[in-house]
Image (cartoon, rainbow, N blue to C red; front, side, top):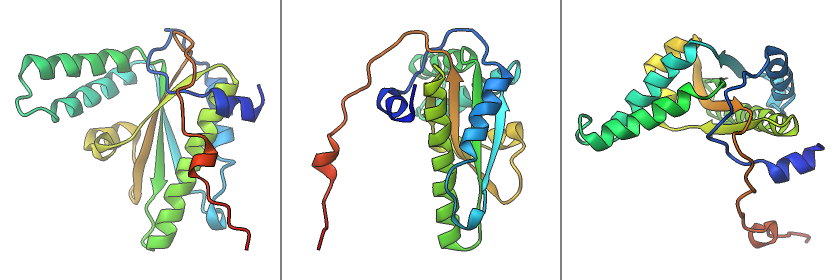
Amino acid sequence: MDAIDAIQRRISVRRFRPDPVPREIIERLLDCAVRAPNHKLTQPWRFAVVRGPARSRLAELRAGHRLKRYEDPRSDEAHAAAEKIRREAERTPAFIVVMCAVHSDELTREEDYAAAMMATENLLIAAESLGLGTYVKTGGIMQDPGVATLVGLEPGHRVAAIVSLGYPDEVESPRRRKPAAEVTRWVDA
């Protein structure tokens, strides 16, 4: 599949077959990720691949984080939500945690974060081209100290994204997006 087809077909996948993703394929995806543009070749990204029993540790962290959304984390509703997240994480064959350097200069920090997210997109498109599904998680879990410990977050770095990776359990059609023409302004003069 070429890159344009992969971009057009890519969707977020939350349910995966139990088949493991071979290390060689993950290495290939990471080789694609590091080809992302980055200002002054800072190469601000770092990656941690979470597989095997380590997935259960990440599943617990994600479930615990979900409980924080509820006024009463002991409620049945909170417990059900946390269990859903835990099961989803435990059934995901692999996670790629994308980390990024946090530079003291604000402009460099912004450029580095953009580069890390472009590396993430390269990874997503490469995965799609190989028949793999992905789902990108961002938000509050990125600051969880347990996640930082699990992935060996280096000082001066932050978690930018957690990418779920596996073979899709079912094939879905891409969701509708606004056509580019609706969100584009042409400036010719």
